[in-house]
Image (cartoon, rainbow, N blue to C red; front, side):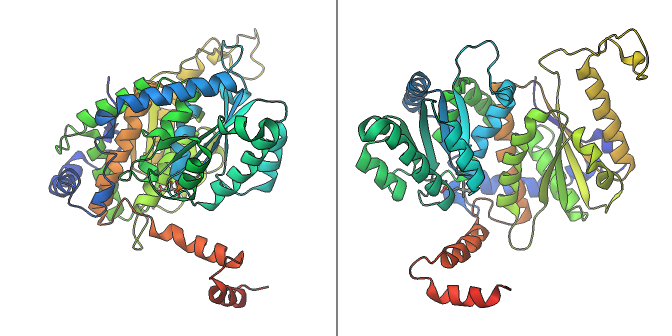
Length: 449
Ligand code: PA5
């Protein structure tokens, strides 16, 4: 079993040969990454993280996860961007019944909810009210410790916790994941004695899912983090070679690079399994924030099929030919659902009676891919053996590695995000942050009333 990337269905649009020709560029990118000489080289801690993971830290995470599960019904995970998407992706993929508020076969299960990933007053209001009568803990995650969205949400839920449990007890229900030395969150954690977990200096937010940023909430949800990390370690080893033929992550990076050069500026990550929704969100952040700079980069977007075949499918099939697709294909559905035999053919579906829904969905996948290729959209197929912690760990590392290589092939620093600062500067100034008065005057003139 292996995660593979295959473009053979798209032979009419893109050949293996054209990908192979990129081997020298891949070699160069590989060298920059592995010799740690490329831009952003100070943020390469993720590269060998799975194999070098600190066992004691994992034990501490498991203990904290157990304590959270014993003391609470709900864990409120507060973070934004790379500080929440990885955990959310893993949870949504591996615990589908969460969507319906229950866990299969378990009477009492910790529910993980997210906050601080936006500043939506209605969402926070309703979450606060929903928490009434439920025992809860908080895991606040911020590498910088100063990001506005999680900082505001933390104020709100910390206050709620303190009102509910008092100052001393609430301290035992707050788990902080932040920088080892600096930031407002670090200072607060030290002052209050909150249990803290460290995000290594050399790991950026969107590459941090295998640090406590991801592993604490994932473990608290009851998912086997050893398996997740084991899958990531397996990927680290399997994807070490620069050889395009043997490295599927590099083939994926080369395919993106080739198509970008051909004028394909939008990549759709598509899945026929709705549980991949947040994995796609995580992937969008990973590639968008890593590559979208210096007026360059593929615009990463995602679609959930067959749902979106009834909305965006028209554009993909027939709109501007600037799009290519990467389809995630998981070999089997975990559960079996059959089309009922109703004894009549009023809906014209008699030919499908007693057929597996998974099989039908798979035929939809094959039919869609062929239609899109006929419409001029190159499609690469990323096959994932199964939806398990191990293979999701493998897949996430696969994407991290291909993103770094793809970024280097594009000629950008895949580990910074300078563009994220601009909206913050304006927002702080408009909100009246001391020291930003001059900019505020300029913005107020600019804003059309
Ligand atoms: O990938 C990144 O570095 C960003 O998306 C960050 O994760 C995000 O901005 C949140 O930052 P912080 O963890 O410092 O609050």
